[in-house]
Image (cartoon, rainbow, N blue to C red):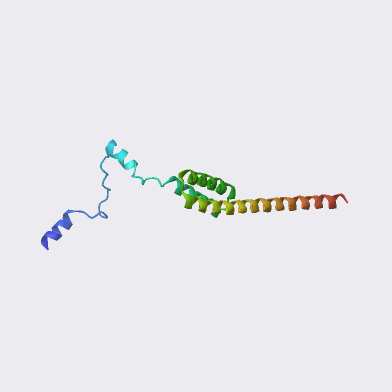
Length: 126
């Protein structure tokens, strides 16, 4: 017990010290190694493109999703990956349908605004 009390009295607690201990100076070699943490290997390109396609679809950015889907489909055909070709062909069809639907909705909205402006112009001139 006596040894424990002597050690605790000799070493000041962090809260008791008025001056914070300074950090030892780092060598330039240590700084360079600390600046670059080890990075995991990049995922395969097809997986990255697939995740981009899914992300674009979730954000309803059909034009970008269709472009990436076409790229994945082309790579799958070149690699001879038949299951991926079938899967991406189905996805391509659905994404293209969604893009056409989005374009049609935009055209209808633009036409409705135009008709509304014409109506206001006709009422104002009478």
